Length: 152
Image (cartoon, rainbow, N blue to C red; front, side):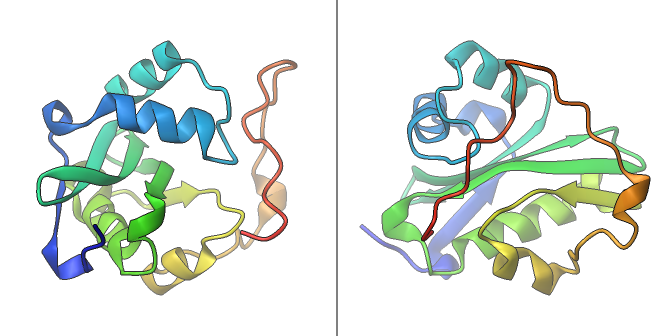
């Protein structure tokens, strides 16, 4: 049942996560991690600062921050379950990520998105001002992103 963002709790307690739900969404519904193995999701969560969004105790959203805790963070795997979208829950998750002590001091916080720019730009995210200064290593057979949906 949908709930507005005011009734959503966001927590970085990894013991509260519904890892089955996170894996199911990432492997079956996301455009960026289709088919991802459960073991990979487990390692990704364990190596990150994870965030769950909860409505009446049930998880309805997720994000994680990969960070050194000082200068850099990468925000990844952000999602809100379909029935809960459009209610500000994604914004609440992003606010919690950016306020977390392991992220809030970072001078560079990056993320990638094909379709949720409106969630991130109000928080100061913008296209890279000098994208030529950033490089990406893509290893054959381990492409990180599936094609974005035509009509998200």
